[in-house]
Length: 526
Image 1 (cartoon, rainbow, N blue to C red):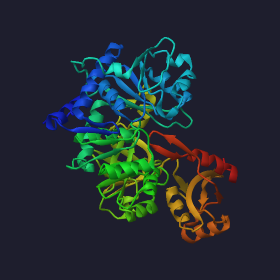
Image 2 (cartoon, one colour):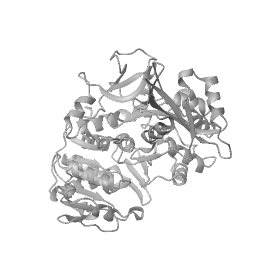
Image 3 (cartoon, rainbow, N blue to C red):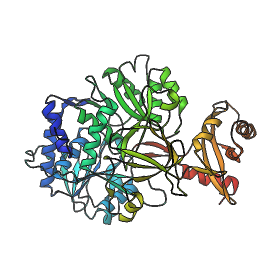
Image 4 (cartoon, rainbow, N blue to C red):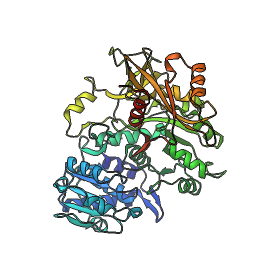
């Protein structure tokens, strides 16, 4: 059988092999893959009658649910490009995404969780909505934009099915937004070949082809972490337990009640599930991948999860190569499973490490910038040719901007290059300093950043003290001096009640740029 190179062809292949496959387990009952596909074909026809054709952009500002997947699959049949919009985004972010993407349709859920989505939309500048022609409303509530028709989702999927398919391997499938710092977020464009191929290759690499496989879909579909997992589950013909929004207690109950075998999560999600779990919650689990957004070397979390019967394995991914690009082996020691990275998912994927200063390719164990290549790779940054040229090497590798090193089993992610520290002439991962400081009994968590001072960079650490413990900067500096090379010892260590964080489609992430700004104030650096 020829590998499917479009999303509709992938679904068609699964249905031929497993005509009775269940796609979704929701509060309202089961939805078969055949019914999901039929609804997607009707949604495609409904969107076509709204003027959507191949190449047009359709923005999905929706929570997880059958509606998200139905509209996504419908757009793939039309050859239309889905623009994923996080339900946490507010007027400034929505304005930027709709304005720059030129979305013709915006699908939204006005009544979701009591959030005033219509009010948020009303705060968007009118010129950002110039291309918008249709609002597709899902669930309860209403919304209006001057000059736009409003259609009900139920009406869209009440149309006859689209008889033709306009999908193509090189057609745009989905756009994810990167998290911007000083510049506006970039739009990462993935084509249908990349989505379909990666979904198919994740299945055996992650064990989703197990006969009893059931996936917990708690990750937001609007990010690559959630969509890569969902598409791989569909490619396996296995059911996913759909959660509109994540809650630790609800997830723990669903794992036990639905006999969930697999899921992926951020470190924060894993902690919240463990806090709510009972003694038998994890009995059915085969494998759980996790992304350490808060701490790239979270050995304590992995060890604590092992003790509860929750076996975590570190992952690596990014929008430009999709989530689930690499995974640590399930049978590895906790010290290895705590690291982001691991074996490459695709047999055709490649990883290498380059010294950012000399440009020299490095051997195993040496730290430098990760460069990755594989069939899951993005095509371009939408409408940003300059950024695309800067991101992709002449021989087709994406420059990740991540500090890492090659290993026998693949590679290990250490930190973002912008977060790495050039100390004493060496590239140092701040996670190495964090891990040592967290060994001190007064420290619950640590984040280290670098500040340029004089001709070099110096480390500055921020800690969250253990509850009830008294912070003592001198004691922590002495602790560092006993265990770290002199150039790694922070020049200042400050206490915080909590680290500054931001929400992304893939999880909660610590605002290291904010920490660097705070560090400059502490030490008077440049």
